[in-house]
Length: 447
Ligand SMILES: Cc1cc2nc3c(=O)[nH]c(=O)nc-3n(C[C@H](O)[C@H](O)[C@H](O)COP(=O)(O)OP(=O)(O)OC[C@H]3O[C@@H](n4cnc5c(N)ncnc54)[C@H](O)[C@@H]3O)c2cc1C
Image (tube, rainbow, N blue to C red):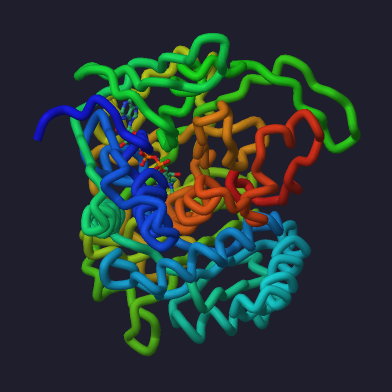
């Protein structure tokens, strides 16, 4: 097929957001008799799932301290459930297991989950938390846990397989996905902020509207759209903080403990929920008993056949220095610089042993292969979903987004003229207005 010289909608990025938007836009056009999937072109410089979506842990949860995030996630979880087989989704549930410092935050999350009808159980107190956990795993031994939030919905999906499933669904609606095409810039209209063409390494594509869904490459697209690299943010006290960098990178540390999947089942022999444990109990080495940290730490993990063991991660670390200088390519496990560190492996495997007796003495089973990857975060670490130019919609998920399957559906509605109340709290002007999302006590920048 010839390289296209124009398209009514050009969507940049064949990850979760670009493909979900393409799928729902195609369906929306058809339902309104306003066009078809053939009006939509998705382009990606790599392949389908070449970015963060292809390496994500794949966890799907509701557990967020911020009401707007929770409501958005409830919408996305419902879409995962509807497309369970096509998107390789495992609805095993999700648990947030916390120390006293997070008790109040998690209690509030549970109360609001009840208010929006999102099914979860909340257990409080050290003895009851331990009893609940031992009811699931008889070798549970983590100390200092005083609350357990058990979300009965959520779980995880097989990262790249789900994205390929989504691509197939979009193509079945007539969407064209073109890979190996790198966007180099945009041509703006005369005396206008509107974009008339997308400039690529294979030629120019004239466009009606564009959707930019670039994952961690948002820094580069922000610059191509001539948007400010530094902004003013009004904080919770009403004070304006000037010159705040728009983008920051964090390195996500993840890895795999290569034990048989059958070694990690519930007492009933079922696949366990995804577990997220935060703790302020001292963490000691599973290798030599030395102290790793007395600070708050956190891990998440699940048995995952795709990874061939227990896969998960720990709190990410901020990449120091100017975001403009961070080398994003090659990305993920292919990066010479940004892959999970040996310190992470030691900490994460020791934390698994802290939680479950069955993982004691198993650190040597950690798979020593590159994993993890960079995420690009906004000033408040929450997404920006907004029209940043008259015909350019930006999906900048601040690295929350594999679980956010539903965002593309809501963006498609907005492109078709129906504003979404769920997306409204994520506009760019919230920084100037001081309408920021509340901050939790979690050690993670995304909770
Ligand atoms: C290690 C890791 C684990 C994660 N785990 C989870 C998790 O468990 N749950 C969760 O909800 N989220 C998780 N995330 C976050 C999540 O993966 C991302 O938020 C989400 O996948 C972003 O999706 P996207 O579609 O915006 O971007 P991406 O999937 O990154 O897709 C962007 C695409 O844009 C393409 N592109 C970039 N530049 C250009 C260009 N110039 N021209 C053309 N194409 C271009 C890239 O090739 C890429 O395919 C994780 C992230 C990482 C790094």
